[in-house]
Every structure is written in C-alpha cells, then in structure tokens.
Length: 192
Image (cartoon, helix red, strand yellow):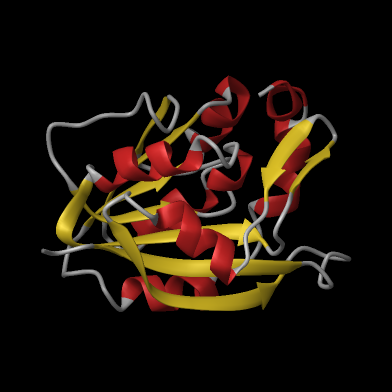
C-alpha cells in the first residue's frame, strides 16, 4: 500500500487515459442488461467510471486510501477503502472486474481470496482477472507481484468454486511497456 499511497497521482496519470475497450468487450458479452458490477481493486477508478458511463450499477474498492480519494473524483459510483477479503455485501454482482489487482495478493493467499470473491458473484455472473504473464513471484518498487500463466492460474483456482471460461494474452497498453505480456481470463462459477 505504501507504494500506491505515495505514488497515487503518478499512477493515476499513467493509467486513467488508457483505452480499455478491447479488454472490456469479452467481459461485457456475458453481462445481463443493467448489471451490477464490482470493480475489485479499482485503482484510480478508470474502469469503474467506464462501466458507470455504460449505465451499470457500479461499486468499487481499493486498499489504497490515496487511490480511493482519486477514484471518488472519477464518476458517480460507490467507492470505498477496503481489501479483497474485507469487502462484503448481502447481495451478489453480475460481474466482478479485477484488472491488474489480484496480482498483488501472494500466491498462497490467492485461492482463499478468489473463493471469497466468488461468494459475491451471482451464479450466472462473470469474473474478469488479469495477471502479468509468468510462473513466478516478483518484487518491484516494494510491490509484490504474483505472475500467472495458464497452468498456474488453473492450479490457483482449484477448490475456489471457479473455473476458466475464456483465457487470452495481451500486451501492456501503457507507453513503452508493450513488450510486457498479460494473462487475461474470464472466470465462471462451478455448477454441480
């Protein structure tokens, strides 16, 4: 959190203007009309604002107080300071969007975190996740990154009640980062 609290404005400046429409498209295909969407780890609020502009009911959270402050200025959606395991609601969401956020959760904690978030997902809902592409854990600027390839993500999903419905790779959309690969996945609830 220290990194994001100390660098919130620089992070916002580097991410708020990025066109994410190509990443939204696969997620949007699976949402019902007028969906309720949760932006889990919303950062500066770019995606929560985009979904609000599409007419969705949006709630968002981030663990960084400074980023929550910036996100609150982006649009008319509910945003609060919270953690993946701390966020709860008495209702479910049609879609959960976790873009480049769950990668900060240590691999040992990811299954429990994913299981908790799955409890907030409607039975027919869709859950988008993205990770830097790889098979290891790394540190950069005091931040932890859990990287995933297709095999590692599948292993992390065991016993979470979720499975991969669709998976693909993309290049980073930020300037001078286009050589970085990302793993993107749409997750669905397992139905017995």
